[in-house]
Length: 453
Ligand SMILES: CC(=O)N[C@H]1[C@@H](OP(=O)(O)OP(=O)(O)OC[C@H]2O[C@@H](n3ccc(=O)[nH]c3=O)[C@H](O)[C@@H]2O)O[C@H](CO)[C@@H](O)[C@@H]1O[C@H](C)C(=O)N[C@@H](C)C(=O)N[C@@H](CCC(=O)O)C(=O)O
Ligand SMILES: Nc1ncnc2c1ncn2[C@@H]1O[C@H](COP(=O)(O)OP(=O)(O)OP(=O)(O)O)[C@@H](O)[C@H]1O
Image (cartoon, rainbow, N blue to C red; front, side):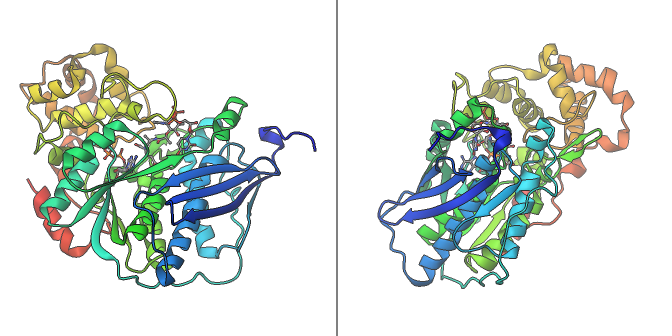
């Protein structure tokens, strides 16, 4: 047989081959392939093995594993985006196929835009006619598995849950030392899940695979749903704020959301699916959904417990390549936005000590901050607040004696503010809680009080 080689445009089908979990070791394997090419095996390692899986719990674990297999396939599917998707083994149902189509189409929105591809209407998950199984309640514990990402958002959630008396374990995926240090700093029980992508993906990338952003929060969510079942925890808590539901407005292309799987549409669809078809008493929600990025920044600033440990700069989280020597690169959109947001709520010396520099007094950084306020550029493809939040943050700093003379704040006041509608620059309304969310009602009341000024 001739040796198979990856030729992106010659590939006809992406195959979901099989998935399995060994309860003795806690290792799951997720297997994919293109056409009759080699198997691509992603491995996810759940600490705490051996797991005793029997009866309804064993069935729920199988359903969660299958969901993870289908969700995590997005990393590999994107390499060739072939016309056909094949699911081997038992067919999936129409509801699951609908969830996956929405995830792949929207979660690969930035990928498609940057590569000049049109994926809408092209992605079809085949499904059978049988209705999806209704999930039973498993008697899971009132215990939260709280995702921790090393940045300010999850630390705000962790402290809010602690204050509300919710028992929790902080959980993260991957080998980041920075996240491990933040997790240790919480003083709470921790759970680290190992994840290794199929090595062939990197080889395919070298051979010209399509590449770009994937909805990684969806993958992390599916992993933690499975982890919660294995450990008997009844809640999986993320820290995706209201602002994550809004994308970048691209002239001619409409809205493209880098963080689609952090948005409300994904949270609602995925959370409802898990409760209906995986385990009826497993709650998946984002604690910060009712809050803006600015409201979260204000809450974060209320404690300095994590100042020497946290970072929101994504350059810390590459799988390949060099790690930065400093926790904050000081040049990327996340560094820009977090500095701008926190400047409104922290004493200046504290913020400058965290970053090691004052980004708002560096004239060369003007284009980066301009993109945040959608001035001469679109909002960056990154996890940053809405442009109106950044504009209001700048306007408030322009009125602050501590910041008003810094180069970029003075430039905003002089050149940009006169072109903006003054009514849209108020900070206070952006700090209000509101909008749809899935936070359990009793917790929501306590949370709203804690976030109030
Ligand atoms: C750390 C980072 O930002 N990575 C993005 C970057 O990837 P890069 O090639 O520079 O390096 P690696 O992260 O090491 O990835 C190597 C290759 O592996 C592919 N890959 C990685 C993880 C995965 O789950 N699946 C994969 O297929 C990746 O495509 C590389 O080829 O640029 C990539 C292309 O734009 C991004 O896809 C990488 O983003 C990671 C998936 C990632 O974990 N990023 C988070 C820090 C992130 O962006 N979080 C979002 C949440 C967005 C969401 O919708 O969930 C956020 O903070 O806004
Ligand atoms: N490696 C990871 N493992 C588990 N969850 C993660 C991981 N990385 C990010 N998350 C979770 O994904 C969500 C979005 O991540 P995001 O980077 O926005 O949050 P963060 O790191 O807490 O804060 P910041 O926005 O300041 O970076 C958060 O709930 C975060 O906990």
